[in-house]
Amino acid sequence: MLFRSFLFKGRVEIFARIYPQRYMGWMPEKVLKNWTGDGWVVFDAPESGGVWLPKGRAKSLGKLTRYIKTHTEPDDPIFIIPAQGILYFLADRPSAYRVDVAFDSITEKHRRELADALLKKKPLIIKFSTGYIDLDYEVEHVEEMKVINEYYRLVDKVQGAEIYIPK
Image 1: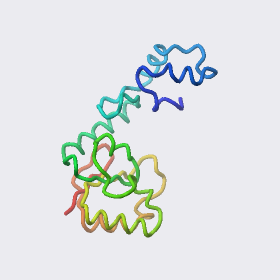
Image 2: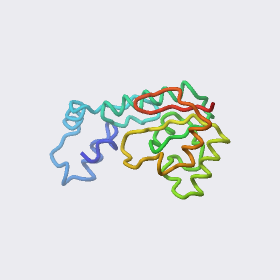
Image 3: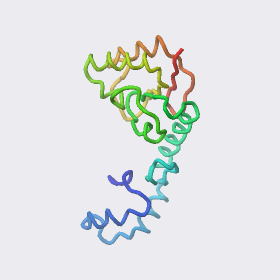
């Protein structure tokens, strides 16, 4: 289902009205029952608005969000590498740079600016080594990785993400 991750509890009927040719004959209760039986759960975080996610994704985001909230203060910046910008919102933490995901720093100038921001603001860094992104971040973004390798240390691994803090 293309729309699964965008559906909120109690709002299935909106999609049935917007896309009647696709959902004709579907009852919201039946759809919700099928999805919950298929491994989809309501993400249990106040900031999520009740979004539905696969169980594993909900568990992973929950653990990472709790880690960020317990290891940083509300005004402390964080930075996500290479992408998973939803964590800024869920953890209610600002980005250390003007873009919220590292892959948006596409030019050499942007990458140098990002590296400078990491040095200046000293954020908690959450780096994903595996996931939805195919490109090798360490090869494409040498400037940021040099700063991380030189001025940060790995302190933890949470749900496949490496957590770095300044040395």
